Length: 97
Length: 97
Image: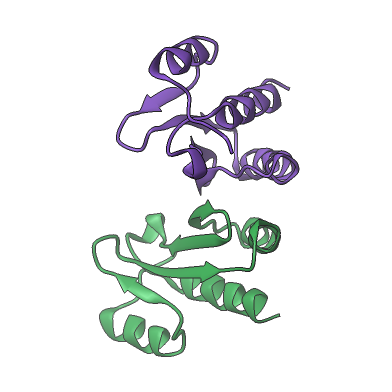
């Protein structure tokens, strides 16, 4: 069973993820990424999809043309868990490529 | 320039697309599809992405694990155009496969 991070742990983790925002209402972290076009945006989503399946941890995400909005939370834990931090870190690495 | 459908044209088109709903607020058509799992859901999205790029007409869509919510509208036309009807028809064909 994955446990949600404490408030202090979450704050620490978010310090290391400057591109991500804390969504208090959803108890989640969010990031919006704007790409050059749909091909780049969906190419990114495909990379994230494979990682998500491998991690067995899936984002909530919306795509409109060149824009992708991602929300990460761990329903089983009732909030943000280390799995979300790992996924956010993996997503940042894909974006930086 | 693509023109939006008239109200009568839209009603006719939607009669042929029973899986789609009219979103009056967005002047769009929407469909939600629930798959067995994320692999099926994202596999579907990949097929739609290729069609969307070929048609140069892209959906607004949200994915949460096995669920995909799709919204189609034609911003250039300020509403639902024949391009949305074509895309909805193509999406239905992919789902039926």
